[in-house]
Image 1 (cartoon, one colour):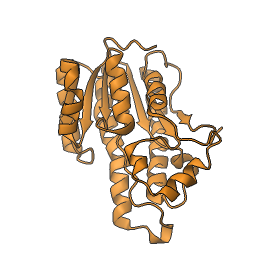
Image 2: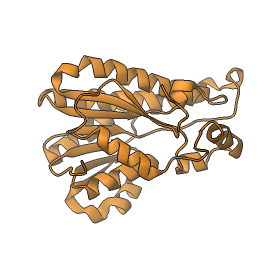
Image 3: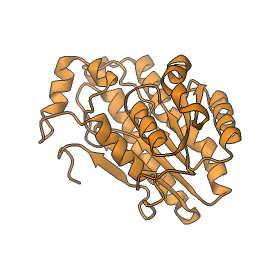
Length: 247
């Protein structure tokens, strides 16, 4: 399952967190990887050691035109795109009740978390349809299934990502393309490290294992989901929740 030789994978949010962990795993397992992130210098510094197998492209995923250009650049470099993994995500302002949520912040979180994933999938799907093969994975969150108090923008945007995976999974099911989501509970990432302690405790208290998930656990599951072996599951949300979600 860990053989990705000949596979070309596009990863957004590859400079940190889950995206970074997945990128390292896939490159180690033989994939050629297009790495997209707002922080291009961090990409080049981190992935330069992989040589021509890693293509770093700085891009703001909320800019549809630049997303299209970036994906075409990756396609031109490697000749195809077998899989897309959308890892870009922000929490926005947290620990606030819904009536206190800033509309500006709500829009910002949706633009990054939902629209960014929509733009990238919209751009790669025609390339996958031309080959009748593809794997798309949207990184969502358990918050998108259950809702986290104090995190309206984040929870709602990730719920939208889950809904998009369901729709796209059904739309392309007969064309060799699977589209799934991954819903982690709290994973130990810089994004989580930046949250208030009270917010992290609120989330880990709901996990039967009473701990955060690890980046390795997330990367291993993501790799399986976008592998050729995962060929009969689409429109599904895989949980990575330490027992928090059992449905």
